[in-house]
Each structure stands twice: as C-alpha cells, then as structure tokens.
Length: 396
Image 1 (cartoon, rainbow, N blue to C red):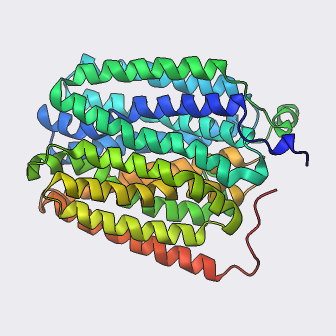
Image 2: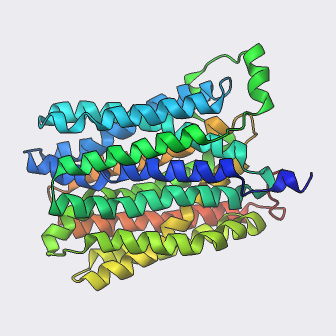
C-alpha cells in the first residue's frame, strides 16, 4: 500500500467533515427544544416522548433502503438528496402548532435524517484509508459530536431568549451551508458499486437492516444511546425545574472535552481496539449522569458536561469504527445504517419509556435510572474483550 493511499487529510475529507458538521448542527439545534415546545403548546407527557420516538422509527425504517441503494449508487447523489430533504422538512415546523401535525412532520424528518446520516457516514468510510479507520472516523465523528453537543447549547439559548421560529430559520441557514459544502465535495465510489450495478443484488429488508457481523457492537451502541436519551429529551425541562439558567453550559463543555480528547482516542482505537477505551468512557459517563442528576448550580453542569464529553463523546466514534471494522467494504453502508439505527432506536425507545415514567418521578430520577445503562455497557464490552484470542489489528 502506498503512502498516498494512507493519506487522511484530503480536501474531500475536510469538506465532508465540515458539511456533516453543519448538517448535524442544523438538526441538533432543534432536538432538545422540541419537547419543551410541544409542552408549551399543550402536548401531554406521552406526546413529548413521541416527538423523539416517531422520528426514530422513521429513521430506522428508511435505512435498509438507503443501505441497499448505497450498494449500487454513487455517493454524491444520495448525500445531496438527504441534505435537501432535511432542509425542506425543517421549513415545515413553523407552519403549525397542532401537536398531531408536528408529529407527522417529525416522522418525515426522521426519514430524511435516516437517509442523510447513512449516506454521509458511508461516504466517509469510502474516503478514509481502511488502515486508519479508527482515526479517520474519529475525526469524522467529531463533526457529529460537536453538532450533537454544541448546537443544542446554541439552540437552547435561542429558544429561551428569542422564539422557536428564529431557531428554525437559523437551522435552515446552517442546512444551506451544508448543501453548498456537499456540492463542493469530491466523493469516492468503491469498485464494488460499479460491479453491483451490472449484477444488482436482491433487496432484503432484514438483510439491508442488519449486518450480523457487526451485531454485537451495534447492541452495545444501542444501550449507550438509550442512556443518553434521557439527557436529549429532558435536560431543558430539568433546568427549568431546578432553576438552572446555564443548561447550555453542559453542552458547551461536553463539546469542548469531546474535541480535545478525539485525536488521542482515535489513534488509541487503531492501536489497541475499542474495548478498554469504551469501558473507561462508560465509567466517566456514569459519573457524569449522577453529577447532572444532583446538580444545583451551573458549576455542576460544567463538571457533568466535561466528564460526559470525555466519556460519551469519545465512545460514539469508537463504536462506529468498531461496527465498521467487523464487516467488509461492500457492506459498510449497511453496517453504517445499522450503527445509526442503533443510535436512533436507543434514543427513541428511551424517550418513549421514560415518557411513561416521567409522569410519576422527578426528572433527576430519570437521569439516575438511565446511568446504569453505562454499567451494563462496561460489562458487555468486558465480556467481548475476554473472548479475544488474538491481538487487535487495524482493518485492512
């Protein structure tokens, strides 16, 4: 393999990271503010949970189809369809305050999101050198992490100090920037795609939904995001209950620590594999959840956010690289789709189940209950680590 083939920082990779960052920022600005918005227009506890659940169901249902299309279609076309769809659906949010209609819009948003994240993640896998998949997907994952963590803090600030419509229009502006950057990106299409276009593989919903070789890391990813789902759905409501005006600080320091740790954790993955990294990060996330649940000051939010950024923020790209490392290049699109479906299913089911529990307990209790998912993640990761009989080697 030539030195050039191992080059990571190319212009297409840089453009793709930036475009994906703006995509996630555009979307994630809305995410923590939809539950309190639904509550403000008369939504019930169940409907608050359905805001996330309807979205997640739609995203999961579309991914087998986009995963199959990625086996026979060029990347740029599919990526742009996803980005444009996200933009158009975002424009629909201000037109109604009827909860049922918002849930329908949310379902459509989930379809566009499932399409976009699967296409974007697969495009990144194609561009990143296979031997540097941990490092490369770590940097690509940084665009996801910053978008998931920094954008909500901005969105919370805008929602609390201005109004929901302004939040939507800024989200639209970020989406337009993403489309421009995707248009400027030169994508890589694997040779297997051209071969599959001649001899098209049959579509199977289950076969395009699940990559069995990557099933175990996808399961652990699901449990991790189930724990995170309580934060996504209830942290803004928690801040109001506790009289904390600095909820955005949790997200800001979350992003900061995730960014600082990413170069270290990505290289560690390529050399040592995912197991010890995930176990340490899960422990940090568990501690962060309890600090958050007991928070009564902005300093507590900063500490919780910092630990959660170093923990959860470092785990997610490690999970994605772990999922990818288990499969072949040809099925990387399906494996990527399963990875993102694990995230959506975890967050979606968390919102639905906690939506029922929320009627009977304080919000802080939801964080405490969810924290034990990270203990389970430690155990399951340790079990898989114990089964390893050979030293870790980076994918070829």
